[in-house]
Image 1 (cartoon, helix red, strand yellow):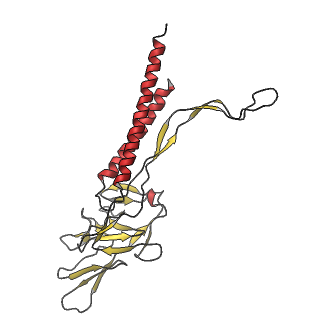
Image 2: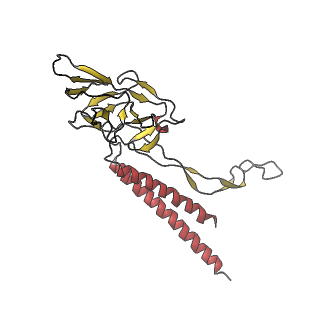
Image 3: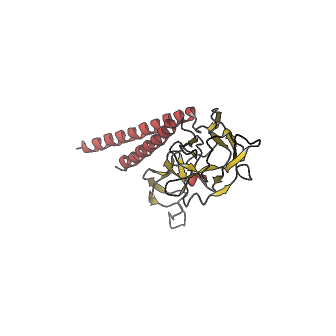
Length: 261
């Protein structure tokens, strides 16, 4: 019976939906996390009569057809790249992006990865790195005797050095944006890499046209709304249960057919 297989695809689809929602909820406190959603498409149809076919010698046509669907499939799990809340941390090396843009991170193999997580630290050489030790592009190094570390809204990094009256420029943080930022591929550790779908990065200083600005001593929170996620989880659970009911009903119908004499 076709209904068994159709309902099974519905259960698999809602299982995927629950997995996506659970990942969103698990990352509610992940800095710079961007939530995902599951998009679905219907599967192929078996056509018994096409709409518009001739139904008599007089030339009458069928206004509607007869088609039976075969279920549903997961089409995509796009990321929702909306701005998360920005909260103060009072930590000098924390930076948030307000608006468009990703921090550029140098990976060990020389490639560039992108992140919205601005929770930076200093390594044993005084280089500004992520919590996993990856450098910000350009290798910003803070002198041992530096004081008053600051990053302005345009990404200029300055420190005060003993014996100097004016702040010393030690680097410039640039950010990148993409034509299709939802096309970026997540590789874990709060990092993304470009793909054919995302397009090539457009890189410039924060605050320039089309780019967001930086805010020191702040971090961007995940853009996950707990109430929305729980509501979606309940809806997915109910859809799963209804598909399970269809399988039970189809099984009972098959049993009735089997018992016929």
